[in-house]
Length: 436
Image 1 (cartoon, rainbow, N blue to C red):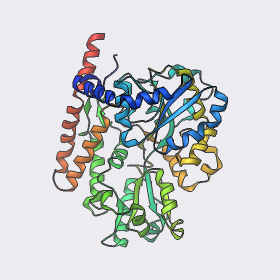
Image 2 (cartoon, rainbow, N blue to C red):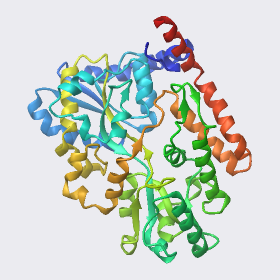
Image 3 (spheres, rainbow, N blue to C red):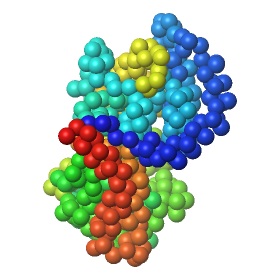
Image 4 (cartoon, rainbow, N blue to C red):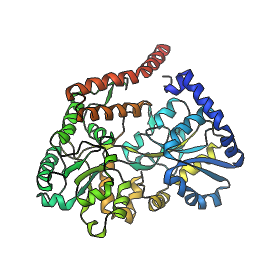
């Protein structure tokens, strides 16, 4: 089967715009290239990771025989810069990549397949990685990235408020969760809420949807599957949080400070990711540090799945320093180095063996993430996924605000998704015709 291509690759006008953008930034890119010597690996990294990579790689560089030039990118500009670099043929050797971006760059043919290198590696063992996380880095069974750190969503909750409502432990099933939400709403008062579900975030609903047997896309990810029974159950459950007054009908932008409001008891449950462990530790006063905790997401009939997220290390096909770049990947994949990255950033490691570290093993907040990471599932691995997820978020927001009937939302989501996937169906049909 021919590799799929994203709209950036198949739309001539889009490709032309990307090339124009590449030429516009060419002087800056070229300047970066001239600074990098032939014995230098160019590494693009984003956010906090870009800030600490220099220190993390210092020991490696002393014995490697080559330099690693790290260029820091903001997450907000990273996606467009990667597409621009691809169009202008100025991609780096190595890059940190959010794993939801990986399918698009695989479809463009920008990334180097890593299967042979992984199989020959004495360092990287796929069996040591959380299954759902490793899966986000593969396409038709071939790995194109190596997980660097992981992300998923689970419950942050006020254990003291839950105890006051009569519950000594967090929920494991949806029905238990509803009982707790009802009791919390009664005990917390009119202007407080049992749970915060910001309408500008799609991740909580998608995470709960992944707990169902039916996939979000069907027939080889060619069509939307939002009219499935599984998504219908999830949508009704999710919307009931707003209908019954458990959650406020707003976004997190309407809350002045999520951490302060959590500390004040404005809400008792919050679905979020591992970065908030550090935020709650820093922002909540000492007297509240013993009253909050984390727990895996409950599921329809028991402990539930959640969304597989995080960041991976990828190599580009155009790199002329692939062997050196792979040595960098193997170094950063070592459990001891991953522990250092966790110490420096708070990022959670993707390898089970790394979690044997006493700091992680005894952290009561991280423990729930370790359990949840054993039950994560990837979002649909199509280049169009982020556009589809945005449509899911917008549809739910319209339902909550009374602009769309809940019974009509699945059909509308399927219609919008089918339009987004039209190019994908065309490419798949064309590839199938060529191989027939």
